[in-house]
Amino acid sequence: MELNRRDLFKSGAAGFLLGFLFRGRLGKLVEQPEVAKQLPSAIVITSMPQHAFRPERLVIAGTVVGTRMVPETTYVPCAACEKRWAELGTDDDTYCETCDDLGGRVVETGTMVEKPVTAVPWSIEEITIGDKAQITQGTAIPGDLFSATAVDSAMLLDTAGEGKAIRIVVRYTGDKPGGEEFRGALIGTSIDAAGLRTRSVLPISSGRLIVT
Image (tube, rainbow, N blue to C red; front, side, top):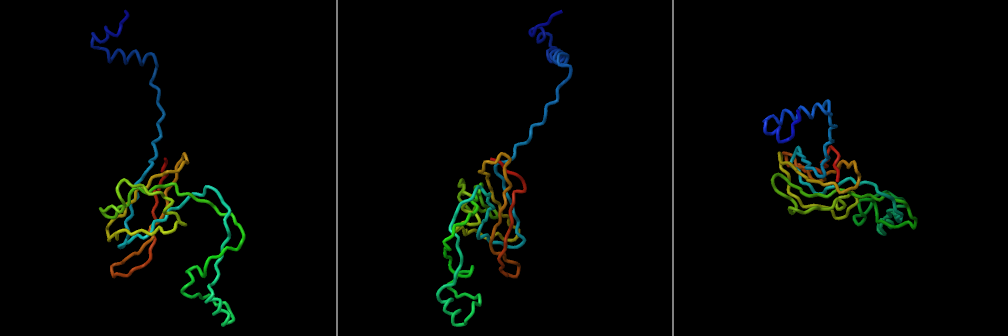
């Protein structure tokens, strides 16, 4: 006896017979391989400081993408320090207030040296302290502004009081197929219960790969 589709639906046994014919033709169901879960392209990183903490700078680890030749530099003392050292007859490794913290002023030696070139393949889409947004909503800030060598990267953010979370939304903008892990740190001032202020570093990490 031959059954067409109309006969099957008329008989009310379409589901059963079609399933039966399907199984009989295939013999058995074929197991499908699991599809790997898509890694996220953006992630929310939440940090909870032990004490009140005021972030003053965000530093993001970069990725080496090449090298370039740059002038070699060194530090030399200012004229006032050189004069004082000459009077003392020795280099006592102490500098006047006009010299910077690295011990003098920067001068080029005339030699070119090879230096790594880094890129920060991330953008910062949101920074929230407690329930208050710290940057304009819908704004994505390029990660290069937060590199370790960035100049004038200080931030004026609210203080995260004790028990207040700091949330940062980061998005991967690189081109590595496998993605990368976000690593960085918030540098700022920690304030304990007694009001003592200390310079502190709050490490932040995605803890997993993030892809484009």
